[in-house]
Every structure is written in C-alpha cells, then in structure tokens.
Image (cartoon, rainbow, N blue to C red; front, top):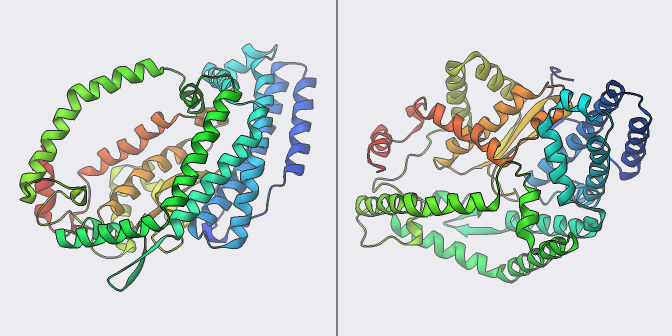
Length: 422
C-alpha cells in the first residue's frame, strides 16, 4: 500500500482491539519458538513487523485526529482506549524481543537486523516489566489529560477567541505594550487552571518515581535514560557536556541577549521580550498557509530530486495538519503511518516565523521517514531522539539560505538577523 492515491483526512480507521492483537501476537511467539533455523525465525520476525505496522498506524491515526480536535468524543474515546492497552502491547513487544535476544540463531539474526538492535533490546529489558503496566496506564491518562486541558484553554484577546498557540503572534509582537497586554491575559488564564496543572504534575512525578522503585532503581533518572534508549553514552557524559555548555555557551548566549537588549532599546530584558529580536519586529510570513507551501514546493524542488519527490508526495496526499485552531493540541510533531508508507506532520501555524520554522523542522524528520520507509528491517528506524534531531536540524540549516524572502515582511530584517545575531 505504498503508492495508492489517498488523502490523510479520508483514511479509514478501525480500532485495534487488545483481544485481536493478543491472539495474533501469541501466534507469532509460537511460530518463533517452533522455527527450525535463523532464516525461519527471521521470516516470523517479518510477521512481527506487519503486526506492529498495523497497530502503530491505527494508534497514530487516532492520536492525530484526537490531537486535531480534543473535543471530538469518538477519537477521545479511542485515545483513552489506547492509553489503556498500549502498555499491554509493550509487554508483548518486550516478551517477543527477549526471545529474539536469547535466540540460539542470534548470530544469523544479528547479521540480518544489526547488532545495535540487540543493544536496544538489552536496554528495553531494563526499562519495562509487567509490574509497570498499571503505572504506565495511569501515566498515559495523565498525559492525555494535560494535552486536552492545554488544547481547550482559550483566551479572549482583542475580539478574538484564541488557544495558547495562537496567542504567540501577540506575545511576539514588535509592540511591547501589546506583548505586555497579551502576557497579562495569558497568565491570568493560566492561573484559572493552575490547580489542575499542579495536580497533574504532582501525580506524574509520583507515578514515575513509583515506576523507578518498581524496577528497583534509586530514582527515575536511571530509568529515564533507559526509556530514551540511550545506547552509546551515560548520564556522566551528559554531565560533562552540561559543564561545557555552562563554560562556553552560556557566556555566548548572555552576550547575544545583551546585544538583543541594546537593539530593542530596553534598560533590561523581561519575560515579555523573550523571542523578540529586532525593534522593527521579527520576520513574519506574508500570505496564507498555501503561500508557505508554494514556497516550500519551490525550495524542495531546487534542493534535490529526492526532496522534490518527498514534498510532492506530502502535498499530493495532504499529509499536513498545520493550521492553528481552537481545541487543537499545542506543539508540532512528525509521525509515520507505516501501512501507507507515509509521514505525517502536525503543527500549529500562528502567524509568526515559527510557521516556517516548524514546517522546515518537521520536514527534516519526515524526509528521513520517507527515505527509509521501505527498508525491510524495521529496527533501522528505531533511531534515538538525538539521531532524529540531526535530521530536522540539518534540514533547517540546508534550507536557511534558500528561504523565499517574498514570504517575509522585510528583507532587511532577514539581513539584520544574519548579521547581528552575535
């Protein structure tokens, strides 16, 4: 189902029940145990890929539609269902991966899927056990509750009803009085949900501490590292890097902010000045989202044949949900609908330069997914967060000099941005 014509909004959805999943999963485990050689085990392993592709596609589609409108009761119910069953699915994955890890044909399997995959399995076995299932279910429910709360928090400002994402165009206004007014209204609104936010945070901290204790770790830090699949460095390495940031980058950042203060003509910077770089205002897009996509189409066509194919694929199948609107989850992300070999991009356009930033950033993730979508070995896509961010940030750097300045209010602002950031 790789090149069929489809549109994201029209894709059919059907719930993956835990009963149907567990039956198919049990069959896979039995077949794996009965396999007579490595080749046969790898053949069974491909059935595992197919099952997980089917499950992940349903879960990603339901989540994206829930995130697009958290007031939609049907997809809210689907999200709640997956919040409950996903730890049970994780339980199967770990049990199956243990079989893979301990297979007497492991040498053959390592040759097929790579040794790094087995290092990842080793880490996964340290991060999950069935004792965590009820705690993971509670954690999922709390995370979904937070997502819905933020998405449904609306602010009335200058005759508009805006969610928190759409407030950013006023919070980064070149007019400081507007920024102060917007920040005041936003803070007042957040105070009305402060108790619930505090409750969610407190429960999440307690939950994650219980997870760590249940896995016999001193605290959540060690378990957190295992959860993030950090397979090539330790918390000591991170501490060393953090010290270098403090020594070298903090003074540089402080100087940049001092230069920014001078450009803005302020005696001191306040929180309302965060993310504002020039007295004449930050660069902002001109025109509609369609104009941004038209400029993007031109950029990606000029970058390479591969990026041209990718961006046209995304446009042809309408794989973007990027317009800001009430009841939409905050933030942006990329994910994969593996049954359709299709990346999807979710964001919240709000009339700031962030609209161009986020589409470029997430296209870096999506381009990686597009390039590797047909890889026979699914483990090759089990990249860590840090690896994933090299793709997104690289795309930002690759496109920085190719941005169509007609989408920016003043070319002079862009020139100033390039010349005066330091």
